[in-house]
Structure formats: C-alpha cells, structure tokens
Image (cartoon, rainbow, N blue to C red; front, side, top):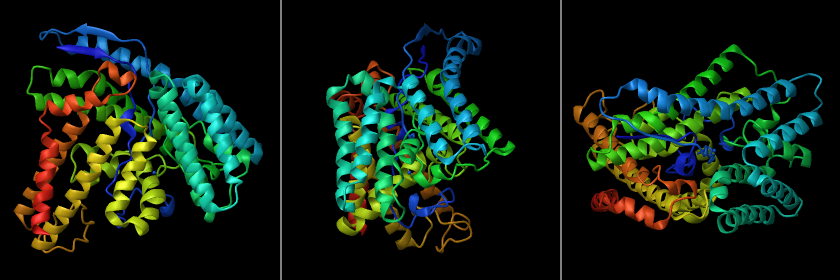
Length: 485
C-alpha cells in the first residue's frame, strides 16, 4: 500500500466552503449573539503548501510504528513548526491590545503591523494584492450612495479574484486564494453594515482587515466583534485549554488525512470505499484548517462563539445534507445567510436566492469548474432533499424533515421516540447524505493537480468513474418529490 507524508499540502479548495440550504427559519445554538451578523474556511480557507514529501512503500506486515515514524511524526513536526510563528503572533496581539497602556489607535496599528508580518511570512505572493484590495475598498466607502458602494465593492472583490485566476501563476493563486476570500468577505460585510453602523476610519479598517488571528486561515469575523477586543480581558484558563484542545484535535485530524486514512482503506478495496477514503482525507484536512483557525481566534482574544468554525460530528454522521452544509463552515454560512440569501430572497424568491447564494460562494472560491460543480450540485441536492423531506414529514406527521426538531419541541405526532420506522427513515437519509459526500468529495484527491487547482477533465474523470451515480440518485429523488408534492 502506498502511504505519503504530505506536510500541509492542499489544505484549501472546498475545505472552507460555506454551504447551506438557506432556510431562514433555521436557528442553531452556536449562532453568534449578533444574529444579524451571522459566516468555510475556513474557513475559512487557505491553501498553504509544503514542498517536502516523503513517499515510501509500506508492506502489509509493517506495523503502526513505521506509519508513525515515516508519516505521522514528520507530518505533525512540519505542521507544528509551520504554525508556531502564527501562534506567537496571535498571543502577542491579544497581550498587547488588552494592555491598559495601549491607546485605541495603537490597537489598530498593532493589529495591522502584526498582520502584515503574518501575510509577508506565510503568503508573500498576495501582499501587494491584499494592500490594493484594502486601499481601493476603503476609497469606495467614500462614494456617496449605499447601493453604488455595495455594487462597487462586489465588483472590486470579483475583479481581484478574476485577476488571480487569469494572471497569477496557478500555484501562487491556489496558495493565497483563501487570504483574498477572507479579505473580500470582510470588505463586503463592512459595506453591508454601513446602514446600521458608521463606517470605520481607515486605520480601524486596516486593523480589521489585517487582524493577525484571522487574516490567514479565517474565520470570518464581523468588524463589531473585532472592535470589542480592545482592552477587554479575554484571558481565562478555560479559553486557553479550549484553544489547546482545538489545536491538538487539528493535529490529530491532519494525521488522519495524511496517514491513517490510506492505511485503513487501502487501494485494493472496492472503488466506493476508495471514494469514501479520498473524501474523508479531504474533509479531515478541512477540519484541520477549521480547528487551527478556531484555536488562533481564541488565542487572539475572540469569543468561543466566534471561534466555533465546524462540527465534524454533524458532517460525518449527518441527519441530512442540510445539516452537513450548515456545520461545514459556520462563520461562512452565517455570512452567506446574512449578506446574500436574506437580501436576495425578497427579489428572487426561495429557489432563486438559494441558487444565487451558491453562485456567490462559488465566485468567492475562484472561477473554478471543480468548485462550481460541487457547490451548485450541493445547492440542488440540498434543495431537493429539503423539499422532499418536508413533504414526507407533512404527509405522515412524522419527524423526518431535513431540519431536526428542537429538544422537547417536536410538533409531529410520530417521532423517533415512539415510532421505529421514523428512526429507520432518518437513518436511510443519513446514509444517502454520506453517499453523496463520498461522491462529491472524490474529486478533491491528493493528485499533483491540487497544487494548481483541478481541471474540468479531472472532475469529469472522477465522477464518470462512479458512473455519475450521485447525480442520477438526486434526479430520482427530485422525481419522487415532484410526484408527491
């Protein structure tokens, strides 16, 4: 069996997609105290590359010690060395900005200076592009007329993404795409909130955009959450322990992605098992980024709510695809829900708003067929699943909808507690969601194309190897919904 130490290769793409079937009635306990400021990694989402690879052949009779020595240890050693400067930067940022001797202007200056150092150290290829985006976006804030500002900011962000896709070297753009995505989300959120809150000064805006705890891996945080860090003592033993727990869990998940998954599911197994393995490697690498970003946010002073980025349990054992895409990247979900879905629903209706939201998510991640295909497929999948399960729940008065009923608040006559077939149906839908995830995640493999982004032919080749089974199944599901509605 072939095992590979990949360092931190390819930790981006779909790993921070903020996906959701946007039912505006959905409420979750993890949502921020600022409900109206509700957003993959992911989120965000960054693509940092280690050039070193350790390829080796493991014979069947070799044990766990060889896997640890040749894959797990070098992977975690590289990851730890890679993240240490970023951890130190976040701790320094929180320590200095909470000092009573730090003036308010100094708070934003320190944030910007440390953030510039972080970007220069980890993603120097996008430093000038990021500074250009920050400068031009603030100049646009000075344009009279809120609708003009919103349109201009949206076009600017799309222009930056288009520039990266068309004129930057693919390897460079693939590496820094997540940084520009987080910056674009921050810029859009500021201009969208200008109706409610006054625009920040240029110094405040630079500090927010370059905040060292969030500028690289995310997560997206609102300007208000950033501003509340000033002189607020966020240190506590509990938060430090949770941050360390996040980072420990991140390293464990990285070892699964790089080492253990291939050992558990060797290449000789059934092709659907291999597809599940590839998708699992992809998902665990996303969890690594998500928990790393959450730990950095906590060390940078942000609240536990803000630092909650993903919920792997709800993705790996999902109640529905709706639950998967909501819990995949919680901050990005909140951003899309607040600034795209709710604002477009009144103009385009429910289905139009869902389609537009997934389209915006695709554009944020770059003009890439692979990402767009996955996102738009998920948009259709979740829409069909949600509508079908709503019809079934209504017809049988059973708790089988895509959205779980709240604890002790189920309005249905038949529930998992008093009806065995309700449990069976929910389990079947969970298995169907896992089937779709294996199919969609298959294209995000560890081939050489991950360094520059996957092509149209790569996506088609991967899905055709499984006979486009997932798409045929969802079409059958839609036909069933159409017949019973």
